[in-house]
Length: 211
Image (cartoon, rainbow, N blue to C red; front, side, top):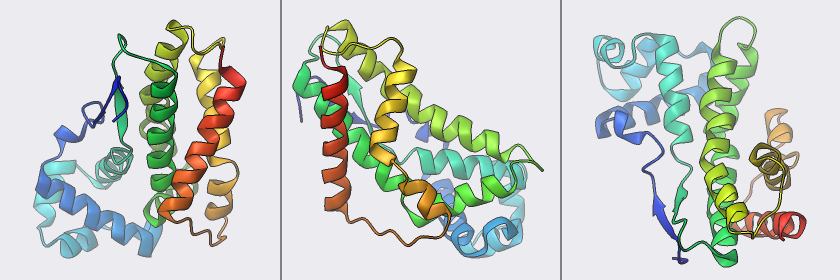
Protein backbone atom coordinates (compact mmCIF):
# COMPACT_ATOMS: atom_id res chain seq x y z
CA UNK A 1 0.00 0.00 0.00
CA UNK A 2 1.11 3.55 -0.69
CA UNK A 3 2.40 5.53 2.25
CA UNK A 4 -0.35 7.61 3.73
CA UNK A 5 -3.23 5.32 2.76
CA UNK A 6 -4.93 2.34 4.35
CA UNK A 7 -7.62 0.36 2.56
CA UNK A 8 -10.60 0.83 4.84
CA UNK A 9 -14.38 0.68 4.91
CA UNK A 10 -14.62 2.64 8.15
CA UNK A 11 -16.41 5.58 6.53
CA UNK A 12 -18.85 3.48 4.55
CA UNK A 13 -21.48 2.92 7.25
CA UNK A 14 -21.44 -0.84 6.63
CA UNK A 15 -21.59 -1.52 10.36
CA UNK A 16 -25.30 -0.74 10.46
CA UNK A 17 -25.93 -4.00 8.58
CA UNK A 18 -25.31 -7.44 10.05
CA UNK A 19 -23.84 -10.20 7.84
CA UNK A 20 -27.30 -11.74 7.54
CA UNK A 21 -28.84 -8.42 6.54
CA UNK A 22 -26.11 -8.08 3.93
CA UNK A 23 -27.11 -11.46 2.50
CA UNK A 24 -30.73 -10.33 2.32
CA UNK A 25 -29.77 -7.08 0.60
CA UNK A 26 -27.65 -8.98 -1.93
CA UNK A 27 -30.67 -11.17 -2.67
CA UNK A 28 -32.82 -8.05 -3.08
CA UNK A 29 -30.25 -6.57 -5.46
CA UNK A 30 -30.33 -9.73 -7.54
CA UNK A 31 -34.11 -9.52 -7.78
CA UNK A 32 -33.95 -5.85 -8.67
CA UNK A 33 -31.89 -6.72 -11.74
CA UNK A 34 -34.60 -9.15 -12.87
CA UNK A 35 -37.85 -7.35 -12.03
CA UNK A 36 -36.92 -3.68 -11.63
CA UNK A 37 -39.64 -1.51 -10.07
CA UNK A 38 -41.91 -4.56 -9.62
CA UNK A 39 -39.82 -5.70 -6.65
CA UNK A 40 -42.04 -6.80 -3.73
CA UNK A 41 -41.37 -7.67 -0.11
CA UNK A 42 -42.84 -11.12 -0.72
CA UNK A 43 -40.34 -11.84 -3.49
CA UNK A 44 -37.41 -10.60 -1.42
CA UNK A 45 -38.47 -12.71 1.57
CA UNK A 46 -38.70 -15.78 -0.65
CA UNK A 47 -35.38 -15.16 -2.41
CA UNK A 48 -33.58 -14.47 0.88
CA UNK A 49 -35.24 -17.34 2.78
CA UNK A 50 -36.61 -15.09 5.50
CA UNK A 51 -40.05 -13.89 6.61
CA UNK A 52 -41.79 -10.69 5.60
CA UNK A 53 -41.98 -9.82 9.29
CA UNK A 54 -38.19 -9.92 9.47
CA UNK A 55 -37.92 -7.59 6.49
CA UNK A 56 -40.33 -5.11 8.03
CA UNK A 57 -38.50 -5.27 11.37
CA UNK A 58 -35.14 -4.61 9.72
CA UNK A 59 -36.02 -2.12 6.98
CA UNK A 60 -39.41 -0.68 7.92
CA UNK A 61 -41.21 -0.93 4.60
CA UNK A 62 -40.53 -1.31 0.89
CA UNK A 63 -39.10 2.21 0.64
CA UNK A 64 -36.89 1.55 3.65
CA UNK A 65 -35.69 -1.61 1.95
CA UNK A 66 -34.84 0.35 -1.20
CA UNK A 67 -32.92 2.91 0.87
CA UNK A 68 -30.92 0.10 2.49
CA UNK A 69 -30.27 -1.44 -0.93
CA UNK A 70 -28.82 1.88 -2.15
CA UNK A 71 -26.64 2.24 0.96
CA UNK A 72 -25.48 -1.37 0.75
CA UNK A 73 -24.51 -1.01 -2.92
CA UNK A 74 -22.70 2.29 -2.24
CA UNK A 75 -20.78 0.66 0.62
CA UNK A 76 -18.99 -1.52 -1.93
CA UNK A 77 -16.91 1.45 -3.07
CA UNK A 78 -13.70 1.17 -1.06
CA UNK A 79 -12.13 4.48 -0.08
CA UNK A 80 -8.61 4.70 1.37
CA UNK A 81 -8.26 6.69 4.56
CA UNK A 82 -6.10 9.77 4.30
CA UNK A 83 -3.08 10.14 6.59
CA UNK A 84 -2.67 13.92 6.44
CA UNK A 85 0.84 13.84 7.89
CA UNK A 86 2.20 11.62 5.11
CA UNK A 87 0.36 12.71 1.99
CA UNK A 88 2.47 12.99 -1.17
CA UNK A 89 1.90 13.06 -4.93
CA UNK A 90 2.17 9.30 -5.29
CA UNK A 91 -0.32 8.86 -2.47
CA UNK A 92 -2.83 11.23 -4.09
CA UNK A 93 -2.59 9.39 -7.41
CA UNK A 94 -2.88 6.01 -5.74
CA UNK A 95 -5.89 7.15 -3.73
CA UNK A 96 -7.61 8.40 -6.88
CA UNK A 97 -6.90 5.12 -8.66
CA UNK A 98 -8.24 2.98 -5.80
CA UNK A 99 -11.37 5.06 -5.43
CA UNK A 100 -11.88 5.40 -9.17
CA UNK A 101 -11.55 1.69 -9.93
CA UNK A 102 -13.93 0.74 -7.12
CA UNK A 103 -16.49 3.38 -8.10
CA UNK A 104 -16.42 2.43 -11.77
CA UNK A 105 -16.71 -1.26 -10.90
CA UNK A 106 -19.85 -0.59 -8.85
CA UNK A 107 -21.43 1.88 -11.29
CA UNK A 108 -21.07 -0.48 -14.26
CA UNK A 109 -22.46 -3.51 -12.44
CA UNK A 110 -25.85 -4.90 -13.47
CA UNK A 111 -27.20 -4.19 -9.99
CA UNK A 112 -26.28 -0.49 -10.06
CA UNK A 113 -27.71 -0.05 -13.56
CA UNK A 114 -30.98 -1.70 -12.47
CA UNK A 115 -31.09 0.37 -9.28
CA UNK A 116 -30.56 3.64 -11.14
CA UNK A 117 -33.23 2.74 -13.68
CA UNK A 118 -35.74 2.18 -10.88
CA UNK A 119 -34.71 5.47 -9.27
CA UNK A 120 -35.20 7.35 -12.54
CA UNK A 121 -38.58 5.71 -13.13
CA UNK A 122 -39.76 6.67 -9.62
CA UNK A 123 -38.05 10.08 -9.39
CA UNK A 124 -41.36 11.94 -9.74
CA UNK A 125 -43.69 9.58 -7.89
CA UNK A 126 -41.43 9.00 -4.86
CA UNK A 127 -38.27 10.26 -3.19
CA UNK A 128 -36.18 7.32 -4.42
CA UNK A 129 -34.32 9.60 -6.83
CA UNK A 130 -33.17 11.83 -3.98
CA UNK A 131 -32.30 8.73 -1.94
CA UNK A 132 -30.02 7.47 -4.70
CA UNK A 133 -28.47 10.92 -5.12
CA UNK A 134 -27.85 11.34 -1.38
CA UNK A 135 -26.49 7.84 -0.76
CA UNK A 136 -24.84 7.45 -4.15
CA UNK A 137 -23.46 10.46 -6.01
CA UNK A 138 -23.30 12.84 -3.03
CA UNK A 139 -21.95 10.19 -0.65
CA UNK A 140 -19.20 9.34 -3.14
CA UNK A 141 -18.20 12.99 -3.32
CA UNK A 142 -17.97 13.21 0.47
CA UNK A 143 -15.64 10.20 0.51
CA UNK A 144 -13.19 11.54 -2.06
CA UNK A 145 -13.13 15.21 -1.06
CA UNK A 146 -10.92 14.69 2.05
CA UNK A 147 -8.24 13.24 -0.24
CA UNK A 148 -8.52 16.16 -2.66
CA UNK A 149 -8.43 18.69 0.17
CA UNK A 150 -5.44 16.97 1.76
CA UNK A 151 -3.64 17.24 -1.58
CA UNK A 152 -4.49 20.92 -1.76
CA UNK A 153 -3.36 21.54 1.82
CA UNK A 154 -0.05 19.87 1.00
CA UNK A 155 0.25 22.18 -2.05
CA UNK A 156 0.12 19.22 -4.41
CA UNK A 157 -3.21 20.25 -5.98
CA UNK A 158 -4.73 23.60 -6.85
CA UNK A 159 -8.49 24.13 -7.26
CA UNK A 160 -11.19 26.55 -6.10
CA UNK A 161 -13.60 24.04 -4.55
CA UNK A 162 -13.36 20.32 -3.86
CA UNK A 163 -16.86 19.90 -5.33
CA UNK A 164 -15.73 21.25 -8.71
CA UNK A 165 -12.59 19.10 -8.58
CA UNK A 166 -14.66 16.01 -7.75
CA UNK A 167 -17.03 16.69 -10.64
CA UNK A 168 -14.08 16.90 -12.99
CA UNK A 169 -12.64 13.61 -11.77
CA UNK A 170 -16.06 11.94 -11.96
CA UNK A 171 -16.47 13.16 -15.52
CA UNK A 172 -13.06 11.84 -16.55
CA UNK A 173 -13.75 8.52 -14.86
CA UNK A 174 -17.34 7.81 -15.88
CA UNK A 175 -17.61 9.86 -19.10
CA UNK A 176 -20.82 8.72 -20.87
CA UNK A 177 -20.50 5.07 -19.85
CA UNK A 178 -23.21 5.10 -17.18
CA UNK A 179 -25.70 6.93 -19.42
CA UNK A 180 -25.14 4.51 -22.29
CA UNK A 181 -25.66 1.53 -19.98
CA UNK A 182 -28.84 3.05 -18.55
CA UNK A 183 -30.14 3.38 -22.10
CA UNK A 184 -29.50 -0.29 -22.78
CA UNK A 185 -26.11 -0.44 -24.47
CA UNK A 186 -24.24 -3.59 -23.51
CA UNK A 187 -20.89 -2.38 -22.17
CA UNK A 188 -18.75 -5.00 -20.50
CA UNK A 189 -15.56 -3.73 -18.90
CA UNK A 190 -13.13 -6.25 -17.45
CA UNK A 191 -11.42 -5.64 -14.11
CA UNK A 192 -8.21 -4.89 -16.01
CA UNK A 193 -9.94 -2.37 -18.26
CA UNK A 194 -11.57 -0.66 -15.28
CA UNK A 195 -8.25 -0.45 -13.45
CA UNK A 196 -6.52 0.94 -16.53
CA UNK A 197 -9.23 3.53 -17.12
CA UNK A 198 -9.16 4.63 -13.48
CA UNK A 199 -5.39 5.10 -13.79
CA UNK A 200 -5.89 7.13 -16.97
CA UNK A 201 -8.56 9.32 -15.35
CA UNK A 202 -6.33 9.90 -12.31
CA UNK A 203 -3.43 10.85 -14.57
CA UNK A 204 -5.55 13.31 -16.55
CA UNK A 205 -6.90 14.81 -13.33
CA UNK A 206 -3.37 15.38 -12.03
CA UNK A 207 -2.41 17.10 -15.28
CA UNK A 208 -5.26 19.53 -14.75
CA UNK A 209 -4.90 20.20 -11.02
CA UNK A 210 -1.27 19.54 -10.05
CA UNK A 211 0.64 22.54 -8.77
